[in-house]
Image (cartoon, rainbow, N blue to C red; front, side, top):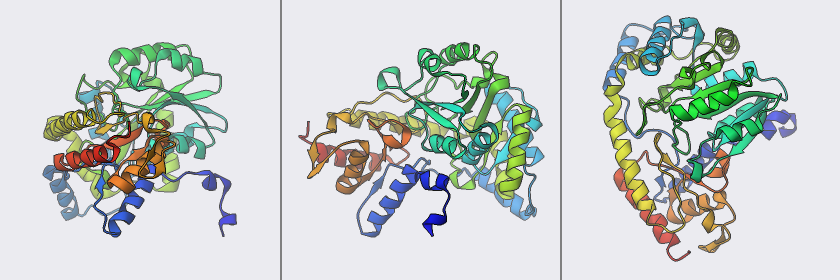
Length: 398
């Protein structure tokens, strides 16, 4: 029956984060004590004030199909959030609510890309960007960045890769997987280059916006001249610990928002009614309500960086947001460890899983084959134990 499958689905790669999660579950079922530092979700419960709003929605009998682009009250709450947090003025018809930010991203690619359109992806990028582009017949143009530049695209790199076929540049800040955050000055420098290419769109993925430890978050759409060509994507999964609630949203030029609504109407229709009602409450509240969670993530960042610094061969930047570190581990390539030759980051990641029983994700999935992603959305105890297991496994290798 596999011969009946489409060529594009056969070319599609399995999500590396989900593949690692599946392998982790398999080893756990075998009785292995696995410490999971691979999944990108907060290890906190959804705040009670949001759960209470969901309960009220159930009691108030919200159980019918929702508008394709989201409840009007939710779209107004999103408009308010953009004004309050990002100093951006949008109208409700520029906002589309979807079943998670991933669907939002797919909708954009499906409505904007034509075959052969080029999409610039600064590496590392979130695992699904590349395959979403390819599924929609676009051409990913990967631009490698390094720890030395804090894994951020430079204006010079951008200009060197812009062509007449470039349709979009697609990035996240704070970045998954590197935790890097673009400053206002850096975004202005990128915008200055883009002024020469007025038909190039920008997708700014800001899902980790509030998990930010340094300078205040800056949206690309707030940079002079960029709002009308920027599609801002966000959601509640990370900041509000609502990964399973599946609500994402976008703000875009009206024509793109209308097109995404049109597509969504033929694919999933509107997002879950109870989740939407809960998100209205989440977005109306001040971000100060989630600051205690952010503070804990910042403490964990210091902990894991201090611990990794003691392992020869791990080279890290200091991430300013999200909850990941993205160490370069290429010094281990070509070494034989626990009877296995390590050729790349994938080998190294599986070495850690199978021998140290610590789950991470290979950087190859993010467009950087020299690194691995480690999530510190875990308890201090698990972080300490995981890094100690890694240190013991690698002791004496370098």
